Amino acid sequence: NAGVTQTPKFQVLKTGQSMTLQCAQDMNHNSMYWYRQDPGMGLRLIYYSASEGTTDKGEVPNGYNVSRLNKREFSLRLESAAPSQTSVYFCAIAGGHSYEQYFGPGTRLTVT
Amino acid sequence: RKEVEQDPGPFNVPEGATVAFNCTYSNSASQSFFWYRQDCRKEPKLLMSVYSSGNEDGRFTAQLNRASQYISLLIRDSKLSDSATYLCVVKGGGSYIPTFGRGTSLIVHP
Image (cartoon, rainbow over all chains, first blue to last red; front, side):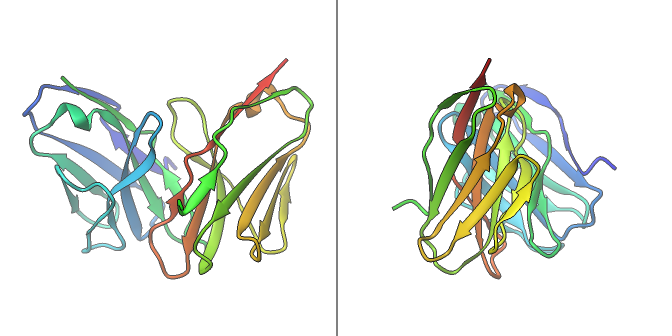
């Protein structure tokens, strides 16, 4: 039971390149989220999916797109990476009575 | 006023000490409350939910004060392994989006 998995763990991109971050869960939770975390900034919500078939913008959606592929998978795409997108990206899931969140191990992205 | 506020610390305490963190929230309609722990360069991990009557899990005790809109975390008999950042999380009823505090840093030294 892995909970929440993310791939890749590390990535270096050049400015203008594109990539997709993958997130998958085996906890059968309805909601999935993408956050970024920068030093001194705390967690900031990029996009979320309350349930399969829906996605909504969070606090910092510009430069990103998402796809809720099915109940298990939620991907985050950077179409044209910029140095300002250098960050650690966390996927999270939520469900159940209290709707507490569980996080994946993160993807460390550097854009040069 | 920030929605969820925490003292960033760091709190520097010796092993065996008792330490307490507070977190204040601005939305009186908040329904769910949590403490998370985050180690350096790792993902946040759920430490405990916070219930209205207060709750305890081993050396950790969480309290909720709705009237004053704050939650607290008490750690007894601190261990070196307790060194981490502790995040306060608040969620409104019916909302899918929790609000995270920026965290309180705890350093436990020998």
